[in-house]
View: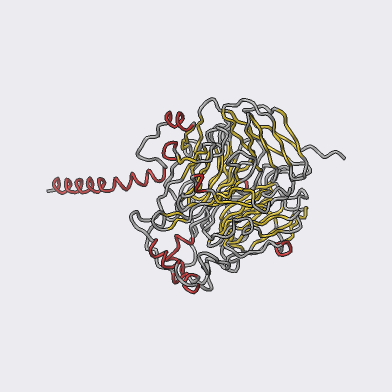
Length: 601
């Protein structure tokens, strides 16, 4: 009898394991990023010039993001409200020539991580020892992103942690640790922000700080006074968080000047980035807004900003902007702007925007959305995106993160979501009116896109062939040469999932060059510097930035693929100070450390 009973138990266990196997394999593939089809690496090299290899575990990185748990009145739509916070920002914090990176967590009591590059293919989390780990608390809120910059020009990159809560600034103590900086009364006690940008708007050599709000700053998402916290419209909402602009006065002091300089908006800002897009010599600001139009604030010689988005052709079609990244996609010395949005075939096709500068009839600044023409329009529910030359052929490629809420497979919240979207202001703005998600997915299990630039005005999607086609809810993307081999690795932060690192293996025969800049009269981080590289009849422009994409920051060094050319004609560096340096035939296959020359008196 006992034998028969034992056999029945074993048989039941066998069938339980058999039934669970598909689920186990599905989760394994989802978390590891491995599909059932083996990557043909040689074919990827032959056809596309590169492939991506997941080296996260091999390089000693083990980080899983946790989302915030907010007021219980939001439980029915918590996966939507708490859908962001996974971020990654790259910097060489100890000036050893190796790229390190900081990743954020978003639940109270969790720790952020600072991965120090040990230089031997290994990384070590030193956030606790450095004093930048335990920042997610009930008192100061939780992390949404971070951004590095040397705000005091002492030669070391400092760290700003952007929060749904009180922003935190950490001074870098010569690479040995970080000290929290008292920000003073000019900074808000609470701001629900996802984005911040360091840039020297008045070109005085000191980096200023922009911060953009998402939810209104009066809202504490853990202790709601009302559930009327949602956007008043899905297209023209202006009840989001305000914008802050902190003018760096030196000596660790800042002055808030947004109203004075005309940087005024209460749109729901998700991402922002800065570059001189109109050639004035001063950095402008592009903001991607959810529930509305993108905004372009042109800088008027450091004396104020003008919202020129609509006039320039950018600010007239409301979408769900979630990313700002710049790239010279046609190698003609002009920066295009890539903004991600929502695309769900059969339901909603907003399409991503690629704003390409054109010659307007009036001769002023003008952009056209050529995402469809270039083949980079339909991504998914897209978040972060970065340009980088992955196969070193001399043209910037594009990696795009996709996926919103991946819950139960085979379920869909879209119908209920659309009912809210079609409602009036009273319905939309109150969270209690939003239908219960009930564990359903909303644009979940979407693959990330890798679009390869053919140099002739078209991009080809190759993620399935070269690797890196995650089906996680990806958020932030950053690119950096983590092993100093001349190729760009791809880092992907996923919501409620693991951080992923993809090593890039490129076909032999393609060359590269990169530049690490240090300002003297300009800010020491050289943020805003513009480098134009000319080689073999080609030219490409890149700009040193702080924030780029969505909740992300690339390496400070500017990296150029050169194709089969082994020689650069020249590189022209336009510094924020107005000074220009020219390098004649700089050596390829190496990173050039360039210090700004002083102006002749």
